[in-house]
Image (cartoon, rainbow, N blue to C red; front, side, top):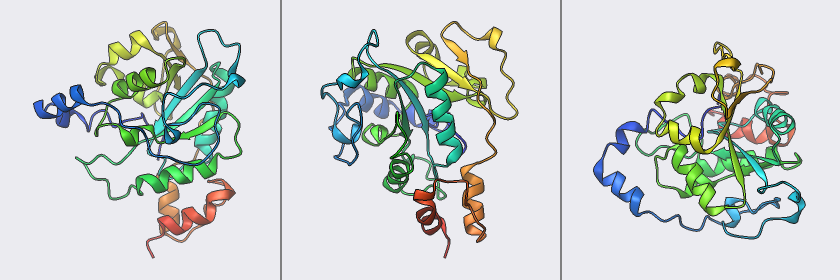
Length: 253
C-alpha cells in the first residue's frame, strides 16, 4: 500500500449520504475493542480505551502527543517504518500509531488481505521499534468511517492525549474534499510528508499544518504484492520478521 489516510475519504461519500447510515452514526457508541497482544506505553485499542496512561510519557504538557498514520498496510513495509521513525524525530511525537484501516464493506477490495492478518503483520513488523504501535482501533468503529470520526473517537477515549494527523502530500492535495476537513484543521495538527508527484508549498500551508522533510521511499505495497505473485524476491522491502509470512499470505499459489 502506498501510505494513505486512515480512511478512504472519497469512496465513503456515497455511503454516508444515506440517512439511515447517518442516524446510525449519531446513535453509535464505541464497543470495547477486542483483546490483543503486545505491551505498549498507552493501552492500545486492542486492550481497550479508558485505562490509565503510562507515567513513562511524563513531562509533556497537555499529555502525550500521538501521531496517527493510517492506511491499509497491505502489507506493511520498510518504507512505512522509516517514515514512522522520521515522524518521531521531526514532529515532536511521543508515539506513532499505525492505524490499520479495515475493509470497506460497501466497496470490497479483493486485493486487500484480511483485516486481522494485516494488523498482526504490522504488530510483528514493529515489535522491536520503540515508539511505534500497531493499532486496530478502526476495526471497532462504524464502517465506512471518516478521519474526522476516528479522530473525535480517539480524543474521547484518550482525553489526555493530543493527536497529530500524518498524511502524504497526495492526500493533502485533495484534503479540502475530505469530510469535515475544516473541522480537522481547526482541532488537530497535521504533518504532511512528501510524495512523488505532489508539490507542496510550505509557505501556503495553514498555521497548524507542517511539511516535514522525509526522503521518498521507492517501496510500495502494490509492488510487493506483484513481486510475490511473480515469484520474485522481496528481501529488503519488508522486515525480516515478516518476510516468510508475507510471501505465504500474498502468494496466489
